Image (cartoon, rainbow, N blue to C red; front, side, top):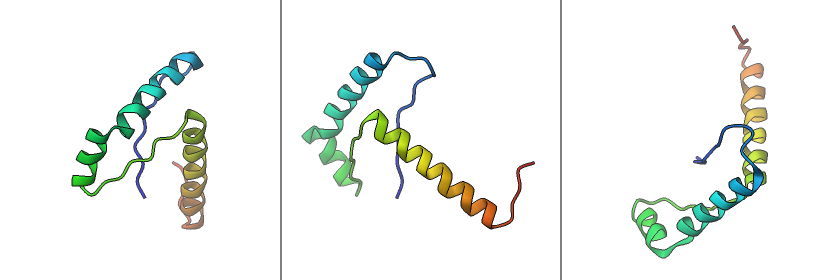
Length: 75
């Protein structure tokens, strides 16, 4: 599974992040956008900033574990 996300610099006020997230969710859920993605064999599931933060953290932990278990070390 692949995910695409929009990130902001640290310190952006939460209300602004929420406003932008709401706009992105509206576009992603629009019929026109969904139809264009479907034509490419892609589906989109918008989420909240908190859900994205959890997903990024979970992905980081999973990849860190795999790299460590493979015997690689940071240089």
